[in-house]
Length: 498
Image: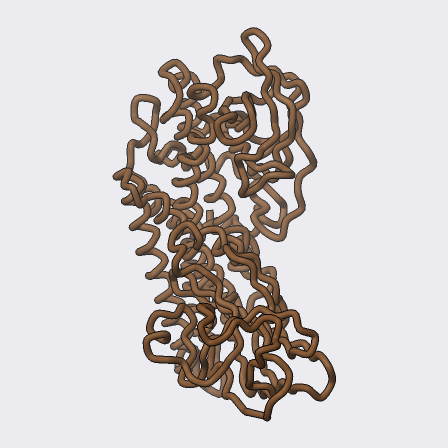
């Protein structure tokens, strides 16, 4: 695939013939049962395969992984008749499959999907739209999650809709920054009649099937991201060997050697997490769901950072082959939204945002237990207040399990001359996002007006892993260091939030 990746991306070619050759190697049904043409391999085997394929073309490999997920759903939850009817052509990639879950109004909140399936005799009549479907319009088999019952997850069922069904149509091909070798379209159902015999599992079982499929999908996509990042590192390494500056190869530059070492370390850490999740999924362990979510969140973010760094080191233009890795890889990232959704469910006690102003010193026992680690100088004082005479400083710190850090400082001057703030934020525009959705609301934290001037060495350095930006806040001058009893938000020394 590697020699053709750039052409496929530029010309938006869906490489059907190449994928069918991959199917001859058993990649059309990697972890499907052998009696229907599958390879019968493990989830760990699949992870290794998808990582290797993605070093050639991430976009095409990602589609192959989606095809595998759809075929596995039918193999795992379908009847024997359905398995032998649908799976053999899917394993051979004589037919291609697409997964229809996302809708214009429901993405991560899959249980709120609106596509309906009303039973009429021996058919379901589907109405609704699925959005951003990989392979839409090109695939022959669509595994569709639709609502056959009431609201919520128990009202969702899974049906297979075959291309050519009356009432099935497709939107225009989406214009994308990358991953153009797999078409993306809306899939539209308008009084689309589907035989009841095409329902996978029982009515109301669709959400379970969807989530089971996505657990493997997370490992697969994380593996694709890993392959793309690995390719970027190889390109960067090779470029540094041949590129000369000041009479010597760039590979002799110690700073760039450190960069490559850091990239390689991130790849190894991501690979270990992905492999661990794959084994847990294969063994059906209780922690499999959490590990699969962690693997996708961590590995895709880290691998995107590695790809971006590799592109920079490679001095890349559109003609350079690794360009096709990073723009599309951004689709893979879990990002801040993923962290906020995952954290409250994994470690609620730790993943609780703390909003504070800075005062005096941090007691040793508090420093050891606090998710906010500030060197030497600060106490966390949480005092909600709406008093207009107060100078407000909002500083949100949140730690997730990695631990990853987010730090935001948004100073607002109220009543000129009352207080001064000198700030340094190296995080750029990202640092201006003072309102972060989280498990708990982030209210304003204040220091009241009045009192003598006092300097504090604010946040010596808040180690931050947030899109690769290090956020720093320092030199905060607080002219008001007392909490008068008449402050609206003050509840006295016994206030448990102090």
